[in-house]
Image 1 (cartoon, one colour):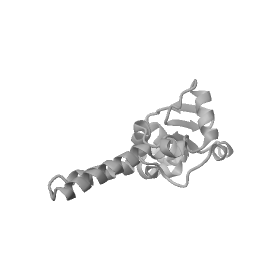
Image 2 (tube, rainbow, N blue to C red; image 1 turned 135 degrees about the vertical axis):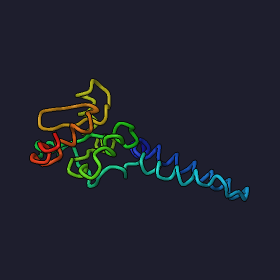
Image 3 (cartoon, rainbow, N blue to C red; image 1 turned 120 degrees about the vertical axis):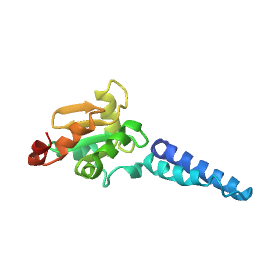
Image 4 (tube, rainbow, N blue to C red; image 1 turned 90 degrees about the vertical axis):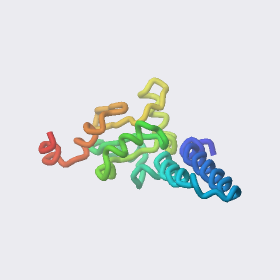
Length: 151
């Protein structure tokens, strides 16, 4: 239950606030202001694990594919959301590992980050970067000829 709340807590809190707000507006028979519910609903999605590409990988899968870009993330983390949005469609080419859902990944992340769960942490081969520039990650996700053309 604890891991579930760590992954979904912000989204569930936003959904509860939206439901309470809409219920209050309906009870008061007020229609103005309901636009806020429409604005906050996408925010609940953005802060949820659904924002990140599926299927999700595990730490073991990332170790088995050292040539792939592995991105360790936490749902709801601002910097992870920024990286995900900046990568756009090419984000699906990376292995996305939910550091909260995968206990082995969480343990490894705390090991390499002096006890902290710093996300996003990106691993490409032997190279590890914490909160990297999205352009740097994107260059590693593009085919070599496309990456050279973008430089």
